[in-house]
Length: 113
Length: 113
Image (cartoon, rainbow over all chains, first blue to last red; front, top):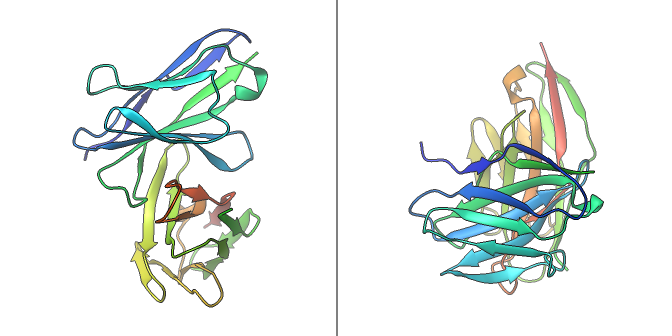
């Protein structure tokens, strides 16, 4: 069964460093998303991506964040200068339709020290 | 703005017990409603959905009915198994305006033999 894969599963970084989280969405999907979950809190929307551009973003997704689909298969989330409060589980998701039926990866845990 | 409220967990049950996890929502318009499940060490998976009032979503013995009059989408299962132990997330998709999944806080279910 097709699945969304994410790497790395866990990354530890120093505050101020750049981090890139990678995702391979399901191959025929058109809509791509990043969500995050700070430990013990809600799953929060960060950004959605369609037709090679950002379609929606939340207030969390400030200038420190960027997304890219560099080669038609990968979908990356970059955090330019990490802060302690960026420590969270980051989930990538993809969908074939714009209806809320998302397929999620297993997540990348980011720990900022 | 749109929001989802779930009952606090953990919910602890014995095998074969009846399960209810309450979920209520606030939204403008007519959202679609979902239950997602996260098994230990895995990403979120769609469990069931309902797209309009009075629809019943069902899957793997779980059911939820879209009640517009009470703005609720409670998850039920008649007889839980140990393998149902997971975190359950209620979510809505607005269908208008800002298109993103809005999640509740999640409810952890622990089923003992």
